[in-house]
Length: 360
Image (cartoon, rainbow, N blue to C red):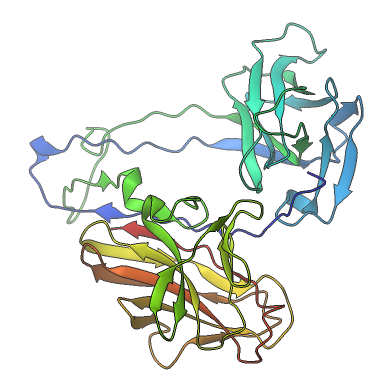
């Protein structure tokens, strides 16, 4: 954690629904009723958490709950949460310098423990606010969750951090089909087959980011006046990004100094259909004259809907929604383009943009 470069990630939920009118006999899909729960979230500084064995408190952590965390790389260091309820979750980060930790649920005295779960918090890039461990159906009453730092790692580091905990008591729920006799309909209702979209029909630029061009339908590209759009090469493994002076990383795009040479995330449609694009473009590094942003399909601008590219001012940390719904054919290329604002200085042009795309 001390050496990590934490980034802002914009999370956008897309729920595609496919609807068709069908005969009653053909409806087989069930819709699960959500479990209601009384939930409590506590920060890593809460008095319900005790630390031992050597932990460091860190503030100013972008992307973390309340902007802070406790971390340790000392094997045997423990963090123990005392909570009341039947569910609990440990929130922390995956990172390049993180290692493994053991998580175990015990009674309120720290005895009568259940099975130990080893959690691997190593990742190829920093991802804050991850549910690293969760447990449910614990029964009512007070429990403890103990996190113990281990000495082994899938990478080269051994750090583990505590960002927050969430606990609560879930109420019982009953799941019934919409055709169940316990449901009475009045006036005009149509019986439909609501089929959940497969995971393979939803894409997110940050989650899908890869060191292989074309993986998960995404490419990192740049434009040159003489050569058109080209894949960026090689991949910079040390900085986990495509490119150097101008680059595409998991969370950011940074154009170079050429005001006529945009850089882009490019997504290639694997099939035909209607897609929903959701996201927000904003400045990650504040300052400078800003950047120009736009979305194109096969070279034609689709966002903004009219005019030229959207200007994102140098100090604009709020940015703009980049939401578009359109039809695509297999092989269509959607580009999320960022260009230098025109001053020829790209020092402060790092731009956060992690769009999501889903077939509807």
